[in-house]
Length: 218
Image 1 (tube, rainbow, N blue to C red):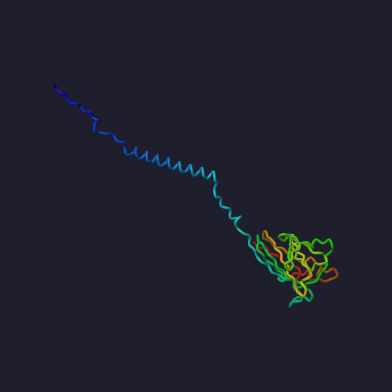
Image 2: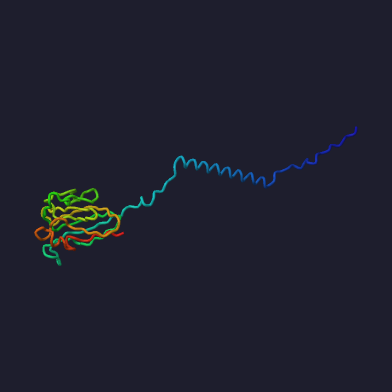
């Protein structure tokens, strides 16, 4: 019996493999899909829980706090006899700051104000109060005022009591102000503690005594 030889297909033994370029495309596509998935999850979490916001610098910055010391003195060397005066009389403070004023009054004694005077009330100080030897007050009786610290352009007024502690040669008044923009102003006593029949002459109208400059520097 004649055996017919078996013919093998030409392609037998020659297995086809995908090209290297096609393999690289598949890998890149997989990586891209993974990256897109991770980014999508992160975006969703940010939308759900919100972003961490950094507060603006303006809110974080604290106001500068400075101390200002002055006195009311009388019969000091170089001064007119019996004329009270602020010392120093030229005050300089920074703009946009908190200023705590400590004032020692060595010219005690009451010089009554009129009953309807607006200068008996504390105005312009933080909290609407001042402190005399540690005791808070928002106004004084007209007959219990010795002097005032008043800056008319800034609506600041602090009446100063004329009665100190028993046996004391001065009292200490403290109050706190908030400065704004830079500018030049004046301060003055509006209690008639000067000379003349009205009490408004002499030191009341003389710079370097009960009238001085108040400069707010930017």
